[in-house]
Length: 110
Image (tube, rainbow, N blue to C red; front, top):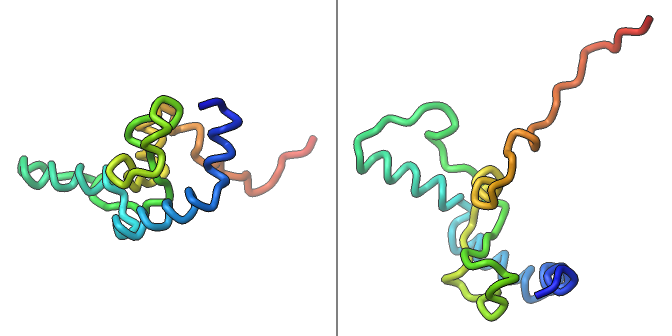
């Protein structure tokens, strides 16, 4: 698939409907967060801070890449609901660059 075809796919009605279906299937919960909690409980480890919660899933991730496997684009077993943070981790993106910068209370003017 080319970049143009991928963009067209993500704007299609079929994808938008499938995305909602997958989010509902996973109860709008991040499946990587859920797996992390289940694994920690199984191993008897305590998690701290944000690692102790299951975040809201806003993304639907293709397990096998869309560009490489277009025939699996709408297959339920190739799709998983993820929060933004876990989705960025799966794609190897720098998660720190997505954190909003704090605004200064007042701008210093000289």
